[in-house]
Image (cartoon, rainbow, N blue to C red; front, side, top):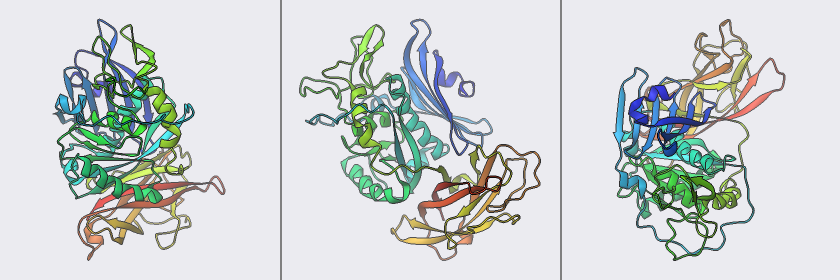
Length: 447
């Protein structure tokens, strides 16, 4: 994927892939380090996301460049540069907080589920898919965790929601998104709240040892710092608080995420960088903080054992891709007849009617929104009703696709604005009797 990013992204550095993953919905996420060719030293990072339509989003972190590169499916490139101060010191006025020990235990494996909110103003400043952008932002933190010898602790995207309210990156905005997003846990089963705003006077802000952050969409490196505050981290050690939860800076100018944010690491005294430890056991060990906080951060909601999907209406109607379904006899059914069909059939026309209860952003009221759903077994096949098992497609791929559609013409009388919520489904296969995988589709649509 780095060839797609090109010299515009890597600059004079070599790219070293650290991790690559293809998500349930067909997004490919890659994170890697940018290496100084002479010193063979990590000097930055590059995170890239390829969406199912072929568009590309990359977050660039180099000594000479911070920004987001967007490449659409036709190859048009837009680089949005970002001010260094918003990224290296995203919340300069945050004060250190006295604390007891962060937590107990040394958990090495945990998945922290994130619900991501965009303000409409933040969306207006993106040049690409917000799902891809959210995946890229989470990967900036995940890359730092892997580099810091914490590969088992990872952040995962579980939902996208949108509001027209212009929450500012400040204390009031942070409290507002916490109050808005935390009650949504019963629907999204998420652990942490991550908001992106288009109005920022600083790069980001987070509640320390809690679960919420608000970040400037024009400061793409802020989130990896702010989520460190959620874990319990503080800024550079100044001698004020004798605890191990600080970031670290080396004598040669390497600054970990919580203390200058110019190399892709959290502090860890066990990790060597340019011949020097990237931390101190007494004052700067964010790796320990993450291990001790992992159980808390990953258990604000029960884990959902199933498939996730994301539907964001202004992008058009790119299908949700469920990979690993090797039978052409796979289909989707609703959990309630009030929503849609709950049983599979041999044949049905494309455009199965659905009635999905979603929350209107403008007034917080729940409305029934009419949508349609279709399925197919890959691009070579024809679309059928979402619950139709049969198919005459011979060139099928080992994947099942779901297409959702909704627009104002289907919903006369509903108030205009954003609608958010969850569509629960089951993925069933006729070839494997009794097999069904639960699926939750996060919906953010504008009517």
